[in-house]
Amino acid sequence: MFPPDQFHFYRHEVILKWPFCSSNLWTSQPDTVTYTTIINSLCKHGLFNDALNLHSEMIEKGILPNVWTYSPIIQALCNSNRWQEVTMLLKHMMDDMNISPNVHTFTLLVDAYSKSGKLDNAKQIIEMMNGVLL
Image (cartoon, rainbow, N blue to C red; front, side):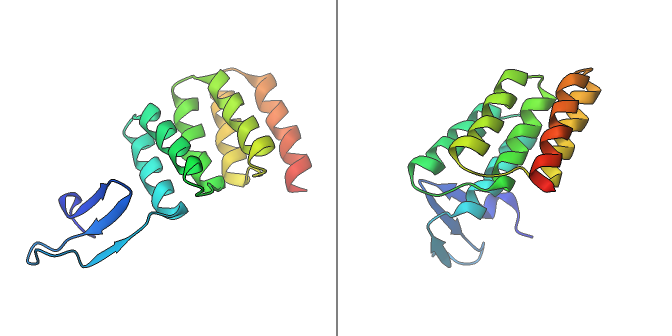
């Protein structure tokens, strides 16, 4: 694994530098995996707005997110009790982007709603899950 100071995300390019080499060894345009990885890290560090902005930038650039892009954002919003945004993002994911939640996404939603005492919402997610996964 590379130390954080050797991995730079700057102006839409991923640049990997070695400490003993002054030139870039590898440069490419970011893809879904790149954006998803950075979004996941931003969410884990509590930078939800940055993650949402990067998600928007990703879509604007024509790079399509997948369910793994949405799951960390949904998890972070659940952990922050931002329930209205959770609902809006889930609707956007399913209706606008035509991406179905996976078992991981459904599990984190049921868990978060249940722990927050929002049992009706958890029940709705379970019913939705039965329709999507069966």
